[in-house]
Length: 284
Image (tube, rainbow, N blue to C red; front, side, top):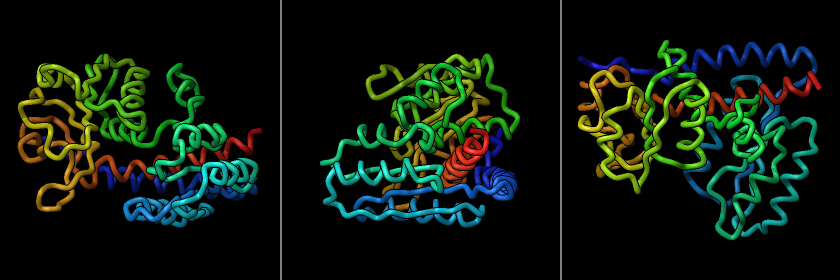
């Protein structure tokens, strides 16, 4: 049995058409959704991510601002710039591209962004609201995973979901979103003993460990849904996920490829959150 491919590129394109239509309606009401991205230093990968976010804004008719700051900027100066953006009525979403220099406290930076403009969904208030099932800005990659499953018609309620990885950005919030949809959730991580015993029980397996070719066919049960969040480089320098795609896809029921799987959904959900924030201002 060959797994059905969950094509994130196609689903993201469909969602962006829907977002673009909503952006037009909001602009007709006098508000142009605006996203501010702060880039500290000159990390090549970060610059690529930022460029893709700006391109998405442009394609969807949103306003985007890129604020480039030097590597040696002080924490105080960065926090002051964020506070300026918190008060800017033309900006509905603020994100600081991670990673940031080590001399700056990442948690303090995240907490300085207004929860009303926290379109990355990292602020403790939004995390707390997500945990308690309230309306919130949801972290973009986990949110994208949920949309992929919804678009594929894959039910979640009652399923056993195993999440491999416990980062604050993907693993932890992904598990919580599945729990909110009435799944039974198991978290696995670097200290988990006998990993395969847990993953082989999963109806839905989410791998977010960032290790190339970490998940093999032995890790999954026949017909499982496999969501590969990894973005790695193999020994040949080729982009790959956490999952050994060829052998796992022969056993799984559904699988996301890398690239063209979860990745395209992350920026799409960032655009959705920015639009949502702009719509919130119309209702306030």
